[in-house]
Length: 475
RNA sequence: GGCGCCGUCGCCAAGUGGUAAGGCAGAGCUCUGCAAAAGCUCCAUCCCCGGUUCAAAUCCGGGCGGCGCCUCCA
Image (cartoon, rainbow, N blue to C red):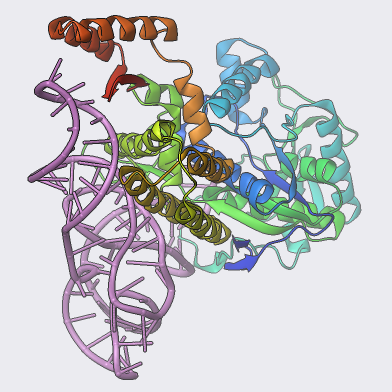
């Protein structure tokens, strides 16, 4: 599988460094608010990476995705709410888990919280190692990383500091630092704030240290195989993670760096801009559902754009994704109507061809958009085969199996199926009404038949008459 | 100001040297009690101007336009 590596700014062939186990770290959510659909774009993209590695490349994956549950915002918001920090952030962790499940994310092996005791301890160890190796200094009770001690600092972000915009804010910390680019590892305790002391003095973690410490604690000897996150993390977060991890261990931190582009939002004629909590232009999954869309459609929308390109989110795009996904599920439902007859070798050929095409595009830096194109080509060809009466039940089974394999990577069809199993009207009631309507139609009482159809329609259930039977589906 | 990305049909979007995937919408047709739904068919020469090449949406140069990072952020 070829993967774009931010470190080298090029696509490289990826394979795990040892035992066919991919050791992957993904930067997760800072839990002071519910994750928005921009956050989840990144999480879905890394989920596709995980699925491609497991189900297509045949690797085992050991993935860590953290929760940042201590920083300025979490502390501030928890204080405003009058709730202890750990409890406050716990609420948003629960919300994340629900949203993640609704979007079909595979559970990852580890979901550490920064404030777990063993992680605070690990941070203390990492900082102690940095102190021992002379990469730090203390000032006003805080501990800083001294970047002048690390010659290749900046290799990931490749920023030219000489050309930085004059007047640009280089530092948002109020603490004393020797060099503007130095960053804090451990912040001195302030009155009223939570505090820990893992043997390096009382304080709380700086932003970057948790990821270095948790990755090194949970994923074994560096370098790990893949480190992933949104593009906005390249600098300073990931650059500083590299500095900390490589400074503490003397070894490379991660072989591959994978970054997902932003989701952009367009508001009423205004130019698109990135969705972020600080800009206040956020939608979360609940907003999408409240607009009448299903999480599976959002996942499909994510899949329709390559992960390294900006995705301009709009409600129109959402509606188009919904329709496109419907074409896929309609096709799958149609397979059930295929009659028994001898298997058609042409179908098997088609499936093999599509399987090769699909795998090729996924292997090509996770080109899910192109992979979907292959699937739609296949759908059209197979629909024609069904129209011509040249597909049998054995073929249909093979088709379903092929789609199952595609969906192991995409994770959208099974998600849709799960939603369909929980329709807005109870299944027994739908089936009862379909029977009643069938009786009305046989009696040529079309007014009653149409009334039942209309009633279900307004409640979100669509009836489709095919021959002598009637099928229902969610709108 | 520095670094970088992007500009493909009405909308969304693949393709990055060999003559434009796919989806949505639209049009026509099939099916149907009428519908709905579904299916099939049709539907672009790639922001502009130069250049390189037998050949460019794809490479180079110059414009115009959009976005990101440089500061908390997925």
